[in-house]
Image: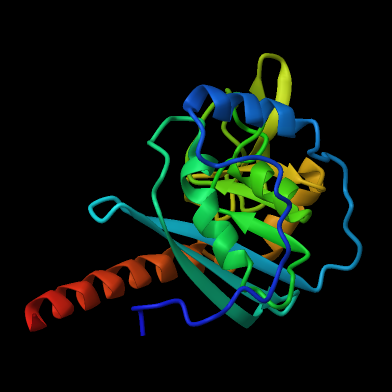
Length: 246
């Protein structure tokens, strides 16, 4: 079940805009350059398919396991799910998450047959020191609308949003609005929503609320997170079984 990626690359096309084997300094330069290609205005027509994307890191084995789950919108009926495993080639450096995780995510998206109109990422988008987090990076390379839905803050300051579900406060940095601190459920900590690509902040908040189902974390990223962790455990168990059979 877990030992190989059975699907061939038959799905979404990806723009090849830079190399991945780069130094941290080169990665920062790439972020600044690609930021010029990011679109902060809405380019959404009718939204029919949405997706959640996440990565589980198996640092012991030096690999990243990426998963993408696609849903029909607005009924949120699952349409397909794809996964991929890639070796970790980039070190952990704050602010450069996409260079560590995006290669595996892109490999998974290459298998997706029904290209989603909106992709929700368990990561930052514009709410990033260089205004180009993983959600922005994926959006530019995939030419899709993307939204960053992060559990914690990377940069910026904010007031506490109202206590009811759907209330939000602006996330500010150096006098610029970079995201929204959104209460997705009454009585729980807010999440950090920011633009990735081809979507305004207000529309990003609306979309996040539209895919919430009573939990703090929106359904697409929550289910993607749970799935990649199961894949990670399954791959580890399979590898252990192979070693024991030798």
